[in-house]
Length: 197
Image (tube, rainbow, N blue to C red; front, side, top):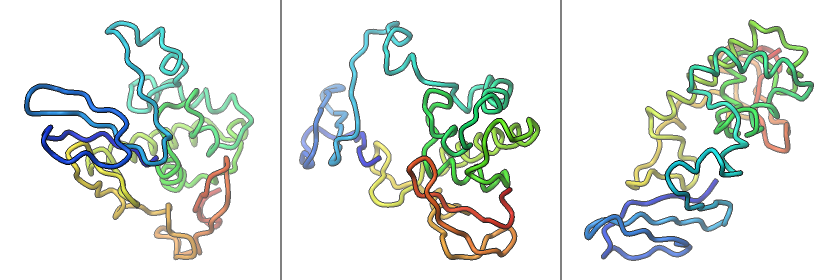
């Protein structure tokens, strides 16, 4: 949420809150900086990934081809609201608050809509929206809201493409209705009451 990995020259100053430094040769270091201490670093031997508890419990990777096939029925089998399901890392790996809100807006689905009360074609559309949002965000280098930066120190440009997140009180880009800010799954969620059903 606030931590980052930096690729640095070993002679560059060490930033405050640098919790790990790994030498990658004489001219390069990987540094882990995390002011809020939300992150985790775990050292694994090659091949141990499947046995690691923090990795083995992760859900389907949305950009994996299995997502299109398996995620709609997985979401449909749950009673929880779709926003909560998208944020549940045991079901869907790697979807955060910003990207869940954007995908739900693109799919025209209300964040509080229960998975089991959403038709499979709509869930397929939602999964495609998740895949599109993540692919575009990766292409743009991520979403810089406050302090996100890539390991090279570059800021992400996807923030300029946000249609829902951070737009409370503004007109909906699709229908012109007022975007509202609610809490779903314990997170702030901006959505349009008029066109997200």
